[in-house]
Length: 581
Image (tube, rainbow, N blue to C red; front, side):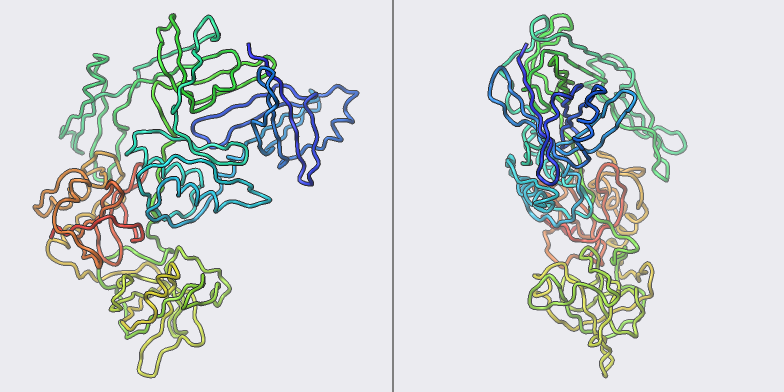
């Protein structure tokens, strides 16, 4: 058994520190594949005569804990740095139970950022820098594996951890590698799971105390029967690999009702679990790959650590293992249009009063055309919303649609939330509007331009559709499916994936498109902005998502698992656009 010695320091915010090691017991150090931070928990117990000593320790939430380990008589090395999150004191047992998390906890902070054509390592670097605070979030950029993929996303309120994992989830689809985010003291890193297999073998009867393996097919689903809302079978899907392997048919029925409700969760593989208890080994950490041999269960080969738990005195390590590389996979939804976002679902001209207008783009971040950082009411400007300032004669919260400027803002709807002394109606009846730009570059590019404004009442904007013919019919078909759930591989009418929705809508006007977004991106004529209603917009590198442009700088799409068919405002970088009609 390995010889392990531990040292601990607890630092107060004022820089003073204490060493409570002599009073510590029940020390547990653990990690999990689905968490960016490792946890260190311990108890502090004291006999009655040392009660005053414990009182003077004054350990509190937010204190910094450092753990140093000497392994087999090596020099002490710092292996953990974290913050105390909770303390539970028990006077009857004279103990204090303390839970801490390492600096990966700072990755749970939420951020807003615009990501355009960034590789996953650059996404991670940019996201971490957004939360850095010398005093309160002292994390820095570590090492990140590179991948030849580009990530594009408008992030509004997602955690840093989810942003990083989402970028590497996309990379994983191309590289077929799995990734995990973790903290090494104050540095945040991303590592490839199982990149190196530990040279040490783990054998039952030698350095392994026990293993536990279970396999259960009782919840397996290898056939899905698809029916319409009258009970008629319309399709049967089978996972032939599962059928051949287990020789047992176990199915589910998926009903395609008008509202898209279904009890089916798709194919389900057998539930397999493997755990191992062995002599303490500091190398057995989440993300590691190890060789295991157990002649009793017949388990022999390379397995991947997805959860680890180290307990000390005596030093024992327990791990949960996976038969394949897995990662915390996640996706971030694009910001969708809503009643308070300043941009609304619609196609064509908005209902309202059309007037001649002069539009001035401004961005308080700096540049040639500036403005204040707050509105007239003192409200801080929010760059994620399309807002504008207008003449006082125009009611606050009115919808203002931009037309005829020759910019990519034509057709977009802004909400008036400000006014100013120089923003007036000119003697010739021309209205002035100042439009909030998303960047200094946009403000400088668009400058000041003449055009027309459609002024609509506060609330949800209504549109007069100017889309006719097959394009109008395709868009009308797509609107029928708003709110229906996303399911990968689904082609409607109850559920859709992105290319299935596009294929279904175009089929309604007699046009047969290929099944996948990658194939659809080769059909029709390649076009650039300004897009026309009915155009297909493709995203990703390589292409993995498609949307249907409906006008008004918006598109309809089926975004991802857990989401629904919805309207989203443009903003994400388009890889290529194709015109079918």
